[in-house]
Length: 206
Length: 202
Image (cartoon, rainbow over all chains, first blue to last red; front, side):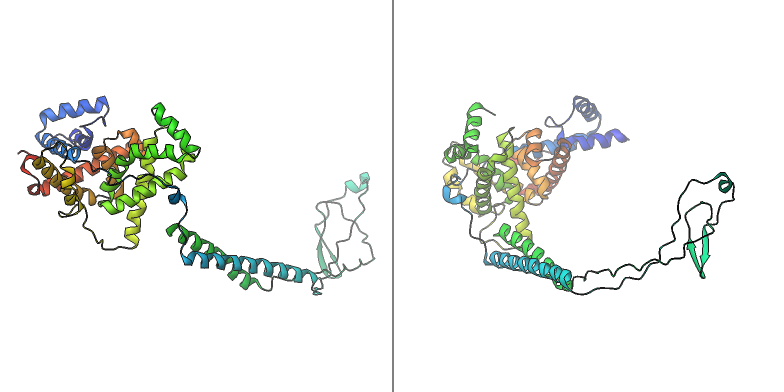
């Protein structure tokens, strides 16, 4: 019957009793209450509720709550807190020592890997190109040598003479050892984090 | 904030415990009533208020100005929230009756409190009203409980509530609307438990 206005006023009614509504909203509610018995009854029950709430007697504080110097000292933490903190410390120190040892060992270890020899692509002397050469068609981007297909630099004119000398193989490359104790290091790291979280929770609860 | 209060806050910020305790005396009734209505019993309310004042002294360096009352009420309501969360984690049966039950500690206080100028009959009726309203408040979720206690029982205005709870003004209004409607429904359903003068006239 009243449509949106009725719904809107019903939503505004709980705040109508105090200064919770804007002047425009108050005007809408006042006008609507004159014509809607349902909203008027709703408002009466809310007004009754608010008046009862405001009539509840206050309770005096049972004692003074002044703060004493002794109250400012922290209460001793539970035993679990110290256990968790000690565990965190031990796990952290063990993790640092193990990581250090592992990294140090990997640097010193006489472990090396022979790197595969890479034959470099023959280099070409870049010199100013005479007019005759510039007129040549563009070279293909690959060339075969000894049955092997190699990529050449892009778009430069082809050189018909490749250098004969074979390049010296690269020196052996030293490869780093992976961290050999990685699973234990991860476990120690997780243990340290969990121990830290547990000690924080226990301290807060304590 | 009155000048005297501002001066006390400044001294408390510098570590003056006596100045802080003057503020405690001024606000302990408000803090206690808020905690008591939110938690529903005197024992937890006392512990929560004491803890809140200790936290307030330790954290007064973080007070950035504005209303000291709102700042203090924020600490009190947060402490009450922690107590209620602890209840949920470790539900226990209290050894004392809650304030919403007759025969609780409220009744023990009647003799003490009736020494004031109020007519004893009126006082007893108001206690009955308080019991029923406490039951209605106990059923509300914490957010609505805090808003209705601050607004309708402590008389804080919307801005103070918004500051105390750290929520926008619109949220204060919507939570208060819902809380009032739910308390109204509860009171209507249990109207026969109210003294006749408090019942809704048909």
